[in-house]
Length: 371
Image (cartoon, rainbow, N blue to C red; front, side):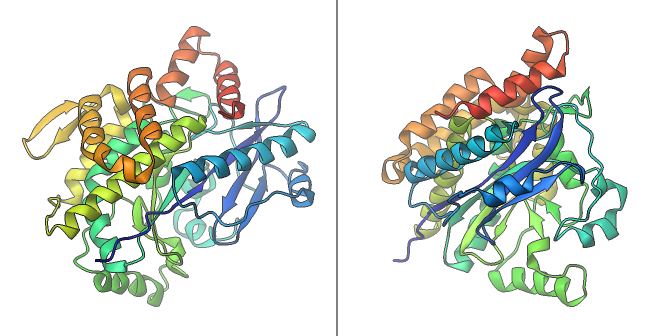
């Protein structure tokens, strides 16, 4: 019987911060498809790219056999980024948005020309940072089946990862403002249901054929089969400052995929719900995060998000021993008790009379604490 590798790939984006003003100077992101780091400056007079281009940073293959190897590679990546940034006089921060910096891009980034043409100023002010998690599911039919089922669980996962309550110096009232920025773009958010991989490919091919997108990489749903790799890529999460939080959410995603695969192999199925219903839960996750309620569609009742996430963790914990992810999943309970990064940022702001420089300092400290 075929069983997917469930290997792991993690893509992160790191914000480069001026240590005096705490302004965002630029960012560094890992590109799996190019196997390199991509550096973008805020303005042409800021020289960020050269130190990273000249440094020897081992990007290598992003594929990890399990969460333990993912931990090693994630820490190595962050340590390399920190060394280069600190040597150049910058600090490093990871979060869904910068708390107060404003950035009007003066250049068109590769892959964003079509988005700019479609969305104009919405895309020009877009600067949200997300975590991308790849889970190895080599069989494309199985990948689509898992995608259909896992859509229901995406809002639960987003609640844990929320890390963007502030935008342009204001408390947005949301726990994941990055999600609002991203979902303003076309072909994003919760995907629809596809009965087969062929139906999914027909949809993608139609977009390319009609020149809606230049290629499949411009379709960026919250979960979908990757255009090049034999993986499911999950994009719904905010970028998180803590490596422990990142690994816990990654382990949860991997365990959810393992659960869906197991159900399929036992000829069982996870009920498929309408995209509109799942989108309702996503909005609740964006707005309230762990402090809110999510809809349990089975009993048609709104229940505390923390309770439903604990129930989800209990469902997937039996898969943890074979995935060697017990420790990482256990940290998800710590996150439930402590709150997400968004909750922590709001607490710091309140403790410092809404001083968002203090929030930025907190995020820098969390990001640079490699544990």
